Length: 289
Image (cartoon, rainbow, N blue to C red):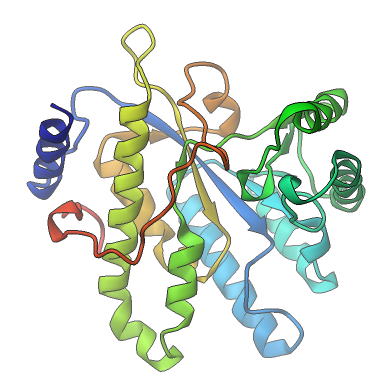
């Protein structure tokens, strides 16, 4: 029965028909690892590349009036990158804490992890927004007493933990994109983009299957992507894919007001298999080209 539902859904997409035409669904976009992954800012040319790529992400969000919440790594903010975070905030987007060093809670004590959060809190204070959001690096929430100790700290310091219900695994695609020589990226991006969109859609369908409706209403989804080269080139297409499949974009605050889909974490998320070729029929034809 589940297989039949999946096949029907993909067929509707292939026919350029919204896959969830009967009911509007809602999704919030969250962006990890701000200011930006890769490129660097140590030279004028690398700074310009980073600025252009970052602003391409901002433009896609602004042009489509999509709310978003970003999570900044305190230790990753160079002196000449504060303007990027201020621009993001000034466009009306939320900015949260993603720790100072981006280490996994699974690999350190609760005390050291909390100190890392505090260090980021101090550094990011000039740009962080209210309400205060926190995102675990690698979605690693820990377990047992260690997990509870961190949760207690976050609650005591008015942080709301930002869950994820759809993981784009974009960091793996981004690494593949960087392996394409710079001069060949333009001719390769079309097919590469299709693979990336197909994978996000596959993840979205899986998230919808995992979640039960509440009072007949679909659950609210929260998408995780990163501030990277890939999304500077593809975020517009990701947004259009969701729009054409009947999704409405909402803020993280609205996504957390109730009826939120089942969150992912490092213990319940299925491993990715991006090496495996995504079947052609899994690619929604109604995505922007």
